[in-house]
Amino acid sequence: MGYVVAIPVFALALLLALPALCDAWAWLIGLARRRVPRGGGQQQRILFLVPAHNEELLIKRAVASLRGQTYPAELMTVLVVADNCDDRTAGAAREAGATVLERTSTGDRGKGHAIGWALGQVTLSDFAAVAIVDADTIVEPDYTSELMTWAPLEGRVLQTFDGLSNENESWLTRLAGLFTRNRYDIALPLKAAAGLSCPVTGDGLVIGTNILARDPWRVRTITEGWELYARYTLRGQHVDYAQTSRLYAQETRSLRQSGTQRARWNSGRLAVLSLHWREILTARISLLQKLDLFAELTFMGPIMRAVLGIVGAGLVLVLRPPGANVAAAAMLTAVLQPAAYSILSLMRHPEPGPTLRAFARLPMYAVWRVGLVARGFVRRRSTNWIRTTREIEAAPSQLR
Image (cartoon, rainbow, N blue to C red; front, side, top):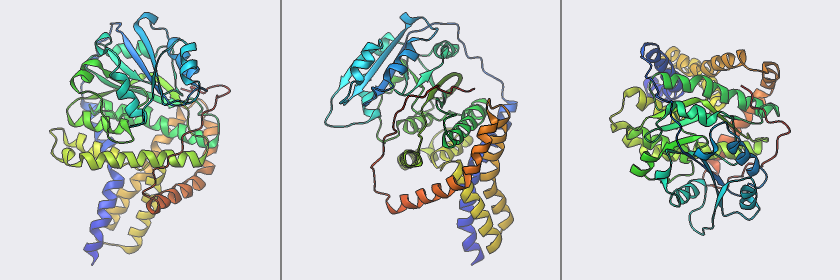
């Protein structure tokens, strides 16, 4: 009986430990790996594609941010896709200086379909790359100049740094901001140093036009970023991490909105995994890349992963199946890894004090996350996602 229990125990332990194992392996490879020169020195034409559904509140800010960069204006085109809008998104975008396409569709709706439709309306050969930027986003003035350190861009796929514009607004946004820093300042540079493909968020994704000509845009799930990440990686198209090109978007302000957003992300990841798990097993990519791809598509978030690690390790030590100590240690990496990353992020955080105080709410947040997952199992067929409410920050954080 003990060995029957040990099988699912070790399966859960492996699932919880996989992100930490992949990052540790990537760190070791990165230490020994010779850095490959990027190129750069060119100034190429780039298309900024901004999908927008009822975004009149923030679209002017996004367009102004893109047009206000230090990069030559004649080499940038800002194209806003007003997707089935019933507000002033299109007019406000034009007033801010963007080119606007208005899409009215009774069929497929959503960001991924809007992007695909817009790409079919432009001459891609006029540009070196397309950068996809959400309508609630602010880019740093040197965003495109930093992108050009990766030029020529026609054959590249890049994910840029995707931070929070309202990080210092509340305890919830401070926690989210810290976990974002853990990912974009620590985890993703580890992957990049080891030569792994960078996971794609969808905001700040840059795709070379040669890539789009060879593999036209198409998405089948509600999370286009995860789908593109899996497809490009499995086909041998490397996704580079452009850490010095930085943009910032709004984080949700309430637990209710945060819950529906995270449920959507988790659902999308699992949908991509269900589409590609066979390819992951058989693809001609490195073992580390396969494991890392699987770890990314099964990742449940740092808090939920830590809760499962603590509860799982406790139960294992009580039940004592064969290999209990090993399984418990593996499960506890789900706590130790995010804790270590958080300490490193706090050491270089511009406002560590208020962020550290936000951790007082962490137990409450963890209980809420567990309840959210439990409700998701009961209501797993629900697709009623609540759209994030937009607000204008009094002073966007943009904290390095």
